[in-house]
Image 1: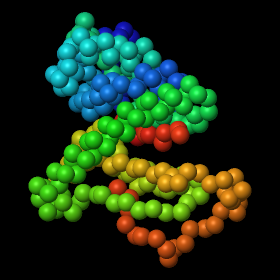
Image 2: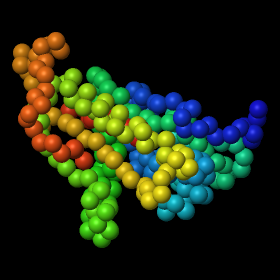
Image 3: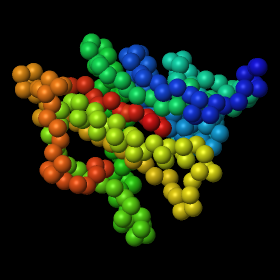
Length: 240
C-alpha cells in the first residue's frame, strides 16, 4: 500500500514512546514543537499540515513546516500521505510519550532538564489560566474543578505505587478522548495533571529502608482529599 493510501492508525494501535536519547530530548525542548504535537493529538483526524498548524498556533507556515520536519527527523512524526509542500499532512508515530529515567550522564541530564522545563512551564501556565477562569463557571463545574495540595512521607516504592494508582483511576475515561461516541451527554474536555516530588531531597542511603522493610501506610493518618510526563520529574505527554 502506498503512503497516499495509508490510513492514520488508531491511537490505541500506536506505541507508548519512552524517550531516552538526549538528541530526541533536545528535539522536543522547543515550545512550538510541543504545541505542534499537542495540536496534532487533538485534531479530529489526528493529522496536521503546516498551513493548518500556522492557523491554529499563530506562527508562519514556513516555521511550522521546519519544526514538523525536525520532529519527523527524530522519529516522532511521519507523513500521512497526500498533499504537497506545506499542505502535506503529518501524523504522530506514538500514542503517548514519556521522558524516561534514569538520567545518569551529564549530556542526558542536561537534555532531560531542557525538555522537562518546556513541558512543565507549558502545563503550569495553562493550569493557572484555566483555574482562574473557574469563578465564571456554573456552580456544578466550579465544584468539579480540582486544586489540592498536600505533603506526605513516602518511600520511593510507595510514591511510584501512588502514581500507578492514579493512572489506574484515569484509565476508564481515556478511550473517550479518541472516540466521541463514548462521551456521555454533558461531558467536557477536561485536563488532569499529576505532580509528585521530593520537598527536601532524597534521604541518605542509611536512612532509606530496604524494600522489604518499608513501613505499611497508615490508614488513619493524612488528609483524605485527592491531589490536583537535579534531574527533572518523568513527565508524560500527550495522551498518557
